Length: 408
Image: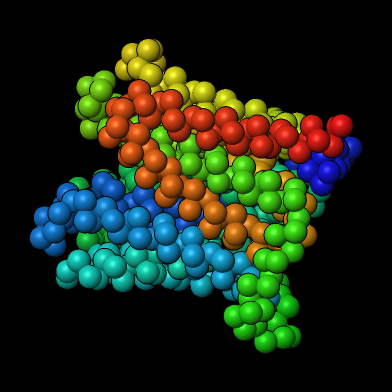
């Protein structure tokens, strides 16, 4: 099987994680890009109440702006991948960063709720154009085993949005208001777009042929006939349902079930982001010699079990909070492993492969949020603790199963 061949090749290669000075600039641009791409989704949350008050709408309605960005990114991602492979990953990433700067600008200047929907449009476009192509560059621009180290750092930067980005934005908003926070962020992101244009490698793409709608979606056809890649996509979707669904309601669980304050809940999420950051670095560093398939199975399985234990409340408030960084670390191992396998074994371009992965992840995240809410409404947090980990365990079994087939 293709997955097994990839894992065996990783073992056969000497692990060398040294990165040149030129590669450091590329990696810095990629990390800043993925940091911004995820910040688009998490930045509005601390300001929901203030935004709703100023725009005279309900808090749940403001929350739907993030959901709209998530779903739009899933759809647009299907287009941005082939475009990145055809016209160049650097161009697509810079375009996405520029769209994200516009998103924050629209947030800061929004006179009414419809303007937030315009911001959601720009944010969804930006996320789809940045995350998938950035992972594609990380997986292909670095030689040999250094690719997984680059993927680890690029993934770790996503967690930085929760560890660094949200606290800074919250402090700025508390001092100067939510509009100032978003407008300042827009200027910073515009600067990051310029750095991406200057530091990312100049790829020429394959722009010789016209790229109509039929040609655009034809780029995905080889994936539909490549069983190992389809299995990995299935793993990614199942993992997203478990991880995002449980993470969405964890704050409510800590507040309603365990009685933690808002500040304590924020600290819990910061710890979770720290765990995800460290797990991402470990996947490309100390655990760099572990075959990706094995890392994927163990990471997804452990993440699902730890989140289930956290939601059970058996360990009390402190124990449940401490489960989150460990779950984040193991979840990051699974994420880095699956994108490593996808970039190494896909039959099509890395941009198409990774952007489809991003779209499917966002789709799985939306399904996880819906299933988590349904389980919560029907059976409370105990029901959620049982239902969603099933998808995480299933993702580990699906990742393990192709290897067992090959063994037989």
